[in-house]
Image (cartoon, rainbow, N blue to C red):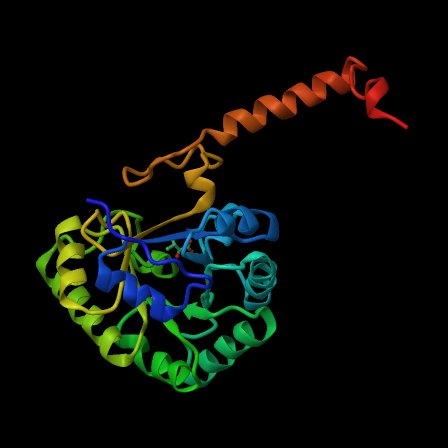
Length: 272
Ligand code: KIV
């Protein structure tokens, strides 16, 4: 079913609620640098997430835990310089908001002031409600993140699907409603059963953006390196690859090496 799309010169947190209300699905993708964000923005992606997944795909860490607030601000400011239309949301990294609400506010303010981003994202429900309220009181829009929350990976122990059991599903639904009541403008639901995600999306008025949460939600988010097939060893069921850039880049770079070695590059036209 096609839905009439409203043109947005600049996507705002209000635009996302309008999209939910009109049935237009929200597209969200990560970016961590200027060149990628320029392409993502020009392709009319509605929300660019400067995710702490930069810790994995850019820095090569196993988890999202090591990335620092300074590093997130560096990535975010590069993305903000490229994004002309998209709403730019930045993850507050692990250890910069869980301690106390004053620290959470300081971290959020630093992100907004030093990067020029439009909103922040935090992982968790009731346990971080006070921090979320404090950030919102300062006029900073907050996106929530429930389900598989990678900053708590050592609590879960694995990256498997969350909230399959009734008790965890009930807590997730309660947390989603709490985040809505607290004032979050949207929530990411990561790796939970599609049926539960669809129920959450129906139960709250704010947009629910899924990753591995099925098609019954209000939008989708992916890590851009996964979508482009650059992270070829990462093969979760929810991932649709639109390119095999790992292979294409490898071929191109090997060809360059061959051309240098064989003295084919540079040729007469490629010099001054
Ligand atoms: O950091 C990230 O990229 C994320 C998405 C997976 C939602 O939080």
